[in-house]
Amino acid sequence: MLTSYQVRAGRALVRWSARELAVEAGVSLNTIQRIEAVDGVPSTSAKTLGAIQRALEGAGVEFIPGGARLRDSTTSN
Image (spheres, helix red, strand yellow):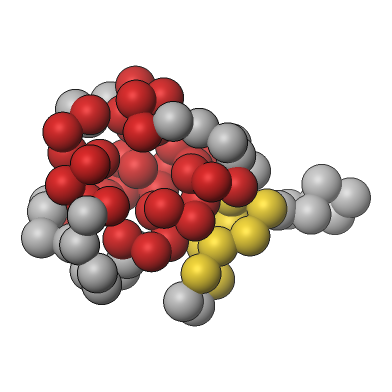
């Protein structure tokens, strides 16, 4: 399950504002702010976390245990 740390890290990696992530994920800015304000697994629906994860992955973020990194663009998936 995606953690608030991973959301913050992923957003920082792609240099998106919270508002940009909200738009890309199709959720409210308030939802992003609430998720990022807690530690650990946020209290939100799996659907919401999935939308955030897909948006960040689409921008090149790869989620790894306990963190996030930019996907290596030199390798194919």
